[in-house]
Amino acid sequence: MRKTILISFIFFALYGVSLQDIVVRAGEEGTEVLLSLDAQVSYTDFTIGEKIVLDLLGVTSTFDGAAFDVGRGGIETITLSPVPSANLLRVVITGETEYTYTVNVVENGILLVLNTGQKDFEEWKASGSSYSPSPVEEKVAVPEKQSALLSLDLENADLLTVLRSIADYAGMNLVVGEGVKGNVTVRLVNVPWERALSLILKSKGYTYVIEGNVIRVGTGEQFAKEREARELAEPLIRRVYRLEFAKPNELEKVIKPILSKRGKINIDERTNSLIVTDIESRQREIEELIGLLDTETPQVEIQVKVVDIDRDVVQELGIDWNVVNLTFGDVTGSAVRGAPVELAEYSGIALNLATLRSFAKLTSIITALEQENKLNVLANPRIVTTNNRKASIFGGKRIAIPVTSPQTGVTYEWTSAGINLVVIPHINSANEILLELVAGLSEMQATDVITETKAETEALVKDGETLVIGGFIHYTETMGEEGIPILRNLPLIGRLFKRTTKEKKEREVLIFLTPHIVKRY
Image (cartoon, rainbow, N blue to C red; front, side, top):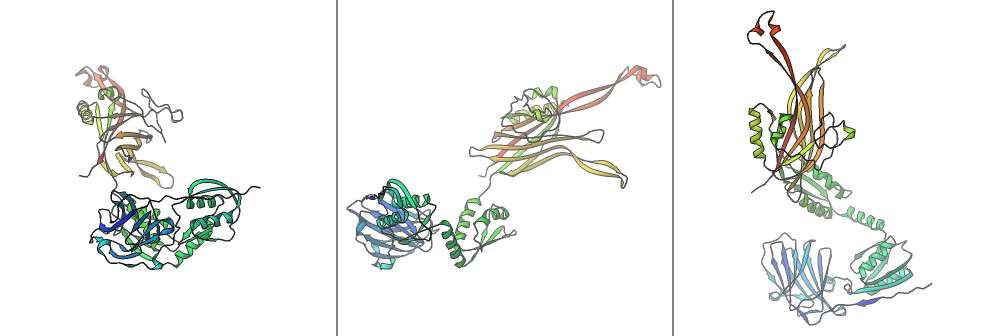
């Protein structure tokens, strides 16, 4: 059996770079901390609680060992500590609490932006401030070789031996939980030591945490129990989150999984607020999530026009029918038209779709046909809904249908007949609108039977573009009388000079939908 362990160290260090000054100032996005340097350097950054730590490689400073009391912009102190063995200068920024931050390399140094929420305070400079020697306990114990790279070539090596080797290399202490054991085979070249540690432990089903200068290794279950115990010991905090756009009962469903075991959430509908009681760390997660979700939702105005037209004059509208983005959920009835969608399981109904860019021109044609009694406008509503919300439109009438039973005699049941439309708009990043549609047409027959035609579809249209839905066919009968004038009105013999006519017409219901994204100026 071959067992080899090879650990190589690769350091990146720059010499002769000096920290000239430290400036704390108010910026547009929060508190800015500028580390003024006379040349660009390599650095690493990490956090320990409320402390932000930067290791500047190959940097020296006349402020070495200094501890500054800043006391503004959410920052309590800034401490500088040289680490000669690693040829770096450690900068520790202690905040009033834990802050998120960004680090950027600028022309004259390194700029940190802390999301403290404080934007109105006096500028502070280290060069113009007094300082005291940094006490030993203020130094943050972290691996001095954190920026070094590690190479490992292991075959069936004892896991505990490997962990001890990595900890020795990193200058860290090591605590291994009960039950951690096994052998590993791995080959890594030029990998940061912490990344190597994570990969090796993950391959065996273990994990780790770093507490100061100690690496603790164990199972995820062990650390989860410890976290739960810590949370049980933390005090509960109650906070009220007043929502501007979202509904409390909707956000409640999203927030509940974040709560700790002792956490609870209540809704105050009067103030549109959420009342959350939980520990501080969970409150921060909830606050961040609410900030992302409680945003203004775009609105969509949908203009609808429903017309009933003779099928032989439909072509006068100039609609170029095409079928796009079509899906069906439930279709009943029968109708056939050119270029239909084949639906073997749905009794042959064809739902036709078209899009129009100029609805104004179409409106003028509809008006002209209506004046010629070739077309009837059944409904012309407008409705406004928010993005991803359902809008319902109904145009028709309520009908009482007699129902006879031996117990109650004749009673009446009310039902609706007409056009029923359900629309759900979805706005995408290109300001196009995906319309989910459920359209239905119901009619009352002479035999007290209601026939219904219903279809579901999806279509993608541009803002202000009109979607036309056709394929709802029905038939009408008109009774007429023809005959010889005067003679057909004679008593008894008038019927010899006239005849009754019956005309059956095929008509179609067309639905025009024009969505507009409501813009706020």
